[in-house]
Image 1 (cartoon, rainbow, N blue to C red):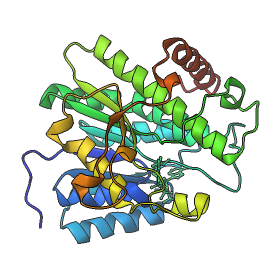
Image 2 (image 1 turned 120 degrees about the vertical axis):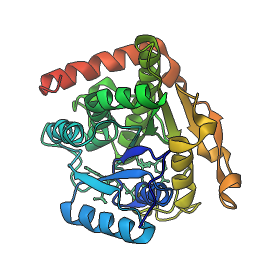
Image 3 (image 1 turned 90 degrees about the vertical axis):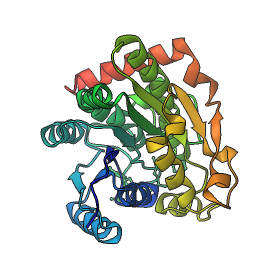
Image 4 (image 1 turned 180 degrees about the vertical axis):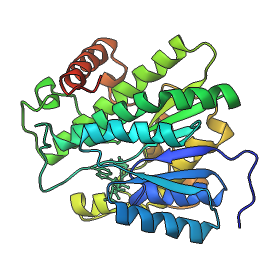
Length: 297
Ligand SMILES: NC(=O)c1ccc[n+]([C@@H]2O[C@H](COP(=O)([O-])OP(=O)(O)OC[C@H]3O[C@@H](n4cnc5c(N)ncnc54)[C@H](OP(=O)(O)O)[C@@H]3O)[C@@H](O)[C@H]2O)c1
């Protein structure tokens, strides 16, 4: 039976039924945090929750089901999180997709833009009151968004489903869009919340980590998935990152193998568009128009 940790954080990790999200959930549960796992399959989620509880002896592990390729389900997910939790210290927008048999969603959008970009926005905006509550209670809250070394300028036509992209381009564009939004969100939260301290970091967890996504996309890997889980665990909970916001953490700046410390990268530079105010404003305007069209704002 786990002890109650007085410094335990409440942490939600999307896409934590597999890959680096699952390993991060295990590491955070081992450290006695209250971990909320998320997945799209109820059965897989239930079995991962049981596995984490039994391997970590932490009973404060629970979860949520939602298919993030359906943005109305993402909205419901945010409501379910708000119904269940009083506050949220850390949100890790980790779920991601690179390749899939059917890349166009029922809304006519590319699934990479939906899962990797629109869904984190809808979820984060929905649970922001919980992050604010946590930041008032404890002094800070954190949002960690999973970017990638693969970042490419966003086509405004592809964003709204009017241009078809190959897997690599769709993935890279969705990751730059997420990074642009992350930089802007950090700024908005700083400007608007004088009493709050909600930090936002975009992170490339390391390239070609050994996960299902990478096996399917590239058929080879450079590093263990632990490299990614380690950086997410650190960004979520380490005091070292307490004051950091509006930055891009590049885990490719760490070594490909070795100790956890050796593999940890550093803050670096995202694609130049991520800090371009005009391009970001235009992207966010198109994003809001699309979300409004879908009845989500
Ligand atoms: N691995 C790398 O080298 C690398 C490099 C840069 C960035 N990243 C980013 O890191 C994150 C995690 O990647 P990973 O390599 O750990 O991938 P992964 O092993 O494929 O895991 C992805 C997770 O996202 C979930 N997911 C996928 N589509 C979903 C949907 N429609 N609704 C809900 N959940 C969904 C998956 O659920 P299921 O369990 O049901 O499949 C799984 O839990 C991604 O955002 C990825 O882009 C990874």
